[in-house]
Length: 167
Image (cartoon, rainbow, N blue to C red; front, side, top):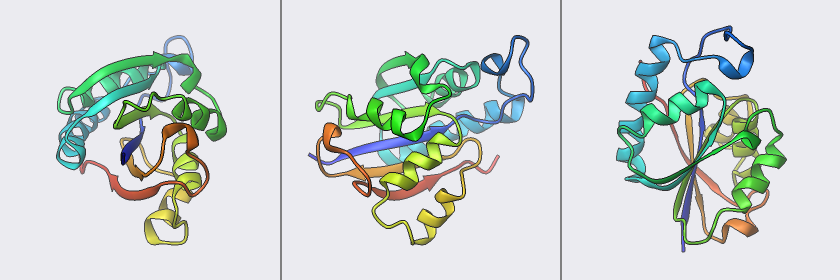
C-alpha cells in the first residue's frame, strides 16, 4: 500500500518565548501561514490519518491551524519530536502503525529538512538539493513511500512536493 509522509516545519514564530524556546508562539504571519498551509495540503493529499506533533508551542499551534483546513483523523502530541536528531525522527516514523496511509509530522529545523533529504530517493534533483539546504518556516515536504513504515530507510521515499504558502 502506498503511503504519504508529510514532514512539516512549524510556521513563523516569535524570537523569544516567555519561558524559553519551547514556549515560543506563532507570530500573526505564522498564523496566516499555518491556515493557508492547511488548505494547500488538503488540495495536495486530501487528508491525513495521523498527525504527530511536537509539544513546543509553535508546532502545536501550527498543527491546530493547519488542521482547520486539512482533515486529520487522529493526533498525538509527542515531546520526543522536540530537539531530536533526524535519526530519532525516523525511529518515530518507523513506529507508525501500517493501517495509517497518510501521516503528518509537525516539527522543527534542522531535523525536518535533514530527514526529508535522508529519505528522498533522488537527492541530486532540484527539490532534493533545496531540501538539503534547509526549509523555511511553514514548509511541508510531501514524500511518497511504497513499503511499510517500519522498513523506511535512506532513499526509501520520493519527495514529490514542497508545499509552502505565499503569505
